[in-house]
Amino acid sequence: MIYLFLFLLIVFWALNFFSLPGNWLVLISLGIFDYFNASFSPSLMWWLGLVFLALSGEILEWLGQYWGGKKYGLSGKGNVGAIIGAIGGAILGAPFFLGLGAL
Image (cartoon, rainbow, N blue to C red; front, side, top):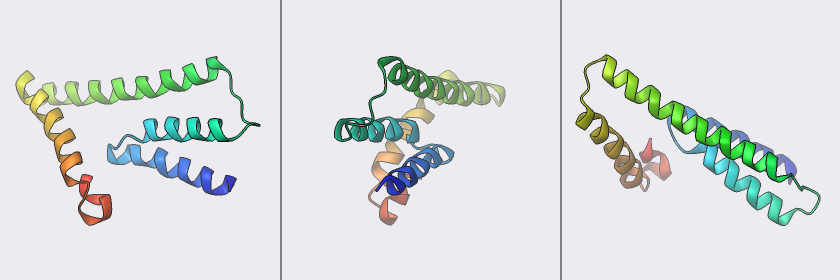
């Protein structure tokens, strides 16, 4: 069972390479594991550290997209439109190709 869980954590982590919310899926799955497994009891600082890392990754991803867009002449409105379009496309495309339509 633990091997399946570790495999899922690796798969969730790998979703980051496709701009999917892998960090948050890792946190959610660790929270579920913590809830159902009495021998796994991380401290509050451990959880805060993981949340900090996930938020840092999201901020760096957004800043990279923003600065990359500015470098190649994207306007502020175009940048906001790109973010909204990416989120909308991921949500609307998710039902297609067994979930791969979100990519």
